[in-house]
Image (cartoon, rainbow, N blue to C red):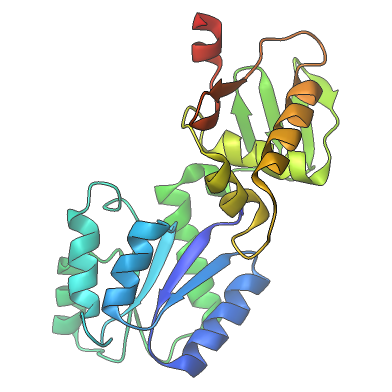
Length: 234
């Protein structure tokens, strides 16, 4: 989905349930991992926008997970908040030295955690906190839930709106139909692959109604991208 994805790495089920409830209430998507090995697997499978990482987790420690995130070319920019019962200054320094961006000692205020998450996401991914997304002559006003092209309104259905928002947040990158299904429809929703093609056609028709350049590029056997330059070159 277009909501920022937070991976919770924590083996205390009651805390995980509380974190999930509060994050989803604030419009975050949530994934869970109960140990370090599962966390590393999920990080590769579906890179999150931010990681909430408990220090004392089974199999691979939180500090080692953090170090591996920082060593990974595809993950090293992912914000990490370390959650721990260790409150000593030396422990905090050790946690930050491992690559964590922030550090919260248990028990912590949920409102403070949410504020720190939003602050880190604003720095790491400004487009997440932005009220307006734009590409070429296409603009999406997130606050007003309105899309315009050449300054003229574009009418979109709910699915086309979510699809366009995802493309605007990741311009130029090619996504397969499977990836679009996971990100826009959700991993737990069964939808046939050809449904993606149907909504891409609807989106194209809506944003190209005034005869502008086609901003959606089709890559044979690969997928789709929001990419005006490639389209112009073709």
